[in-house]
Length: 490
Ligand code: SF4
Ligand code: SF4
Image 1 (cartoon, rainbow, N blue to C red):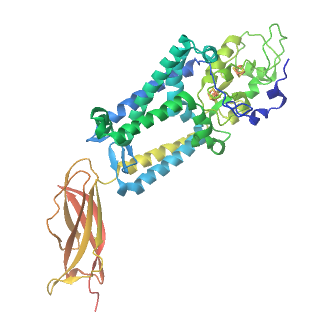
Image 2 (image 1 turned 45 degrees about the vertical axis):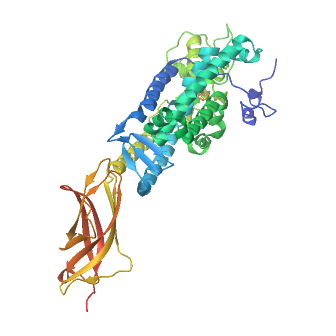
């Protein structure tokens, strides 16, 4: 009998990665088709995710897309609110809070995102992989198909699978493009003559090729070697992080299940039986893990979760479902592999919502609230007023002085706005040079100049504070403080 290397040296699993052989060649993974309560829940989560992904590019708020990340033209739309280059500070602030959110979320909930929401996992495991199972069968049949010569059956199955893969890649890439340049432009590229949209068409083709390659060939390599979030796990996870974890206290020492074994209880079983009623299953000396390796067989990154948390683990929950079924069969309680923290497993207390988790969750919610407040509290018009460079003051007559200012008005609203400038304090007048600004079109950036005229009696010295308001109809929409230069005290 071959010695079990993993048992001889508990750390030997670190010497190699499951997807590369000793010669450095890629090892193709054939994960067994998962089934169970988590897999069913993930199917529903996928349905919601895909529905949102497909519908969102068509949703518009006041004529603007619900979500647009146009990095090419530096235009971003979040929840229908347009952010232009002038909002960069706000955008960066939102991104920073988002970064903090990701860090805190990972510290508390581990890689929950990877398993349930990450587009790579959702598309790979819940769409492309399921199509593969439907056409080529489960892991064993897939392996046999790949090893057999190129018969008509193999050519037919491979052609069908890759044809569907490429068709989905085209749809997915078009949608991703819609999130960058907007669905209207994507539909124009599709609907109008090719000669008018060469660049757009080639971008779509390139995107489709990349997506097809990612899901047909690259697969788990994205998560295990490319994704930066995956690489960060080593520094983000703590002992209290909730991850997909193997209960080694209950499971070890692992041993194959043998019939008619003596009925002595292990310490782990004793602890379990104190908390749970006996199921009537055959008692044994070893822990609950029967070393069946079903949890490894279903893993899309081919790792053994019994070796502990590893960066290749995308928290897909397939091993939880697989092990639960094994536990059902041998009459042991479910949850030998489960969502838990290292602290929870070591202490034997299954308590996910600890005060620390609740505290971090409160901070996460506060960050979300801050982001919402930042986004919704943004003014509809941004006003920049500067004193005209190289100018001090002009005498209009013996009683009045004027200062010249330049101004910029940016309409950030999703509609045209009537606007007017008004001097709020001190008492005086504003005279716009040339045509006074009356209306700002949606997204318009208006530049102009105006004089502020004050009586000498209003001056407070060399610099007098001045407040200028921007009104739209009966509503004040912005206010700017600046200074009026005078001769000073003599
Ligand atoms: S499926 Fe459960 S019992 Fe089987 S090897 Fe994995 S942890 Fe052990
Ligand atoms: S170890 Fe389990 S949760 Fe992690 S990737 Fe493998 S099957 Fe998914």
